[in-house]
Length: 398
Ligand code: FEO
Image (cartoon, rainbow, N blue to C red; front, side, top):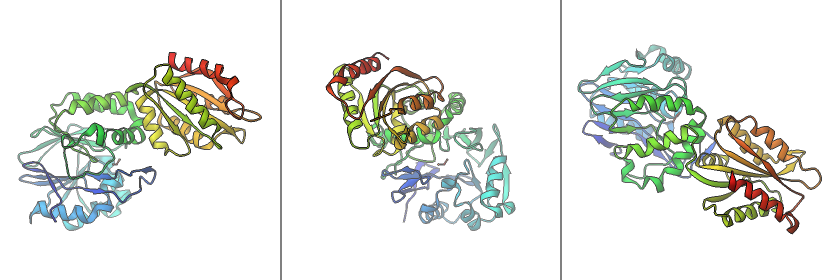
C-alpha cells in the first residue's frame, strides 16, 4: 500500500502514525496519537533521515521499499538516537548492508549501546558545519545538544532550504491524512498537543532551544521537517514565535490556572470559589484542574501557557497531598521560571501543606510566591470569604 507522502519532487515523508500507543515514553497519555516522521531523499545518491518507532515498522519498511523502487539506499542519516526514531536501524542496515550510516561521534556511541552489531556498519562521522552531498542536495549539519538529548544534530538542506529539525518543532498528534501544518487548523488541531509535547519533553532545556533558534535565525528556512507532527512550509514564523516564548518561559496568557487536590470535595469547592472570584474581578482566562484527575503532563502544559498559578492543597500525612506534590515535583524537575504562584492550604487539625509547598517552590528560579496564603480549616465557610477576597485580590494584582 502506498503510505508515503510527497514533501517536494524529491523529498518524501515515509513515516507512520500510531493511535494505539497509550502513553508516549510510557509516561505521557496521547489520546491524539503520534507520528514518527522519516524523510527520504531521492537524489543521485539516496538517503533517509532517521527511521521510526518499532510500532510502525511494517508501514515504515514498506514505505521505504516503495520510494526506493528497486534502488539501493546509500545513506542512513541519524539525527537522533532515541528509540522512537532509531529502533529500525538494525532492520534498515540488514536490508541494505552497504548503506553508509551518518551521525555524530556521540550518535555512534549510543548506537553501539543500543545495537552492538553497529560496530560492523559502514559509518561516516559528521559534526557541526560538515556538509554531505547526495548530488543536487547538500546538507549542512547543525549541532543541537540537549534538545533534548546530547547527541542531537539538525540538518539544513542548502538546496531546498529545508531544516530537518529532529524533535524540535515536533508535536504529539497523529497525522490524519495531511502532512503539512497548513493543511490543518494547527491552532485548533495541534497547538495544545505541541505545547504539551514541548513543555514536558523539551521544557527543561530552554537555554539550549534558544541556542538552536539563534542558529536557525541565520538560515534561510523554507520548510521545517520535524520527527513528529506536521511539516511546516507556510507561516513558519508563527511556530518559531511559540518556540521563542516557550523556551524563554514567557507566558502566552495573562490568565490564571487553579490546580487543586481534594480528598472529599472541600478544597475543590474552595477552588471553584477562587475561580469565581477571579472571574468576578475581571480575569477572563481562568481554568480549574483537579490534580488527581488530570495527568500531570496537561498541568505542566498549562503552566507553560499562563502566567499565574494558584495551587490549593490539603495536608496529608503532615505533608503535601501526593497528586499535588507530584505536580510540584515535575515543575521543579523541568525548571519552570517566570511565573507567579499563590498558595492555599487545607487541614482539619494541623494545616502544613502551604509551608511545605512554599519550600518546594523555593527551588525554582525567577518565580514569585505571593505572601498572602489562604488557609482553610476543613471547609470554606462564610466567615472565610473576606480572606478569600484578599487572596484573589493579591492574585489579580500580581
Ligand atoms: Fe522523538 Fe527524543 O525522540
